[in-house]
Length: 308
Length: 271
Image (cartoon, rainbow over all chains, first blue to last red; front, side, top):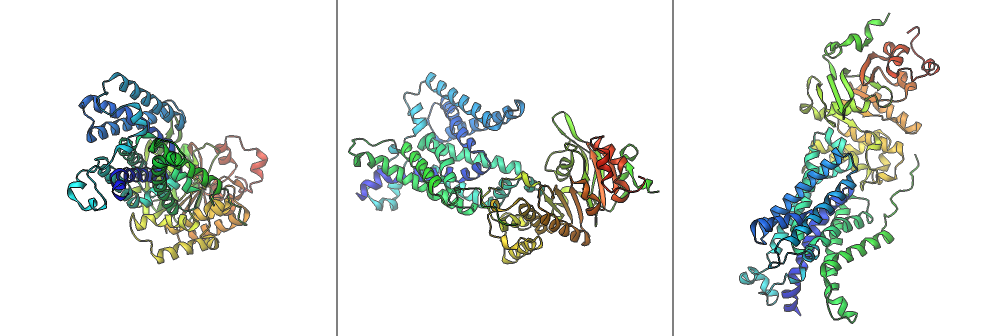
């Protein structure tokens, strides 16, 4: 059991956890800023970026994909702003138009180009390939100390690990700026804080997390993790610090539980095949949100009016 | 008799801004525009230290816009802002700002004391420690507005008046010399209005400059020393006793104020 777990489940599970946490952290602030759809938009628009990067370079490699996706995300953000300002359309509609159009463009590009030789297709874009990210060089837990075995971990793991650590550090360092500019932008501006840069930095951080996660786990998880864990966490507490901790806990729980349920759930129910881990992780995060809506201690947001 | 102290914009030009070098906040030629129509046009103003000034004018006259543009919260098209004779960015630590209560989401997951501590963020920076002494200072600011017993309350559970007092406590925590408040009395209960005006008067007694966007003409005479009247352009500026009269009110509100209403405002005799 131990060796089988290390070889087939440890790395996908870790990647799922890291991707979930990396998306859930900025998700907290995006939701409080009523920009939750930005995460959704980003995870859609990375597709055309990745396809264009593939068409230009001819390979599916980490750096060009990240660059292409980041470029597409920037294009999307600029487009959203432009549509919002020039068309005087409310932000939600501007985002909706932008991300569906870019995603559709990505699908068309994908169909027109010859990507049959690589694992780049619509299905992969949606669901990733979490189950295939196995660690074949591992024999058992001692492989964690074996340099040769460690050199063989799927390349997605160190990539998402670096991004996840980066997101955590940025959140810690810029905590006060994020908090105050999210709660009271005018006051933050009057203090002389660069609120525009902070807002843009948050969106860029979310975009980097989305792109890194997209490659490994697909856009379904990315969309779910930007929204479900932070939204559920908001219903558990009335403090921002505690909300963020809850969101991390829910993200980890979704990833681990979702992976296990996808792999073993159908067997327990008498079925033959495992189901998509990405789909199950997203589903679990949705279930957690549903439970928080039903039983969370702070689900009634309008508190009793205190006496004057 | 008091005619010279009333500066009507037609005659004023830049005289007002230059006449008071001691001004806590002075604006010159401030113009702000949303889209094509200017919201504030070429406004000169000088708000003195050690006094309370009301900015009054009809809805959409640019009162809040003037305040926000002076603070750089919204970009200005042109004009100069100086605070205690220095450029804005050099003296931000001496300015406290109280935005309109309705401008934030009170469902935000945070507590009363947390909001007041935000007034200390400029002082402690990004990673500086919020020491016990700083927390004690935040608590004493809450105490000044009569909200100390609410410090651990979630902000969404407060009444409108209590929220306004928390915002004032946050401004007090900034320990500034210039206080800019955007409609601090809007929609608050009588007890809160009393508490706020007491605090503002004590700030004035300490020599601080207090500037409020104000909407209740009936209390202007009781609360304020100076009045700044605006309707996109500056209409008049000066001591309440001489400047706040039927002529300037008519010029500011453009006849939207009924004559009977003006009569009730307890204006200066014969003005």
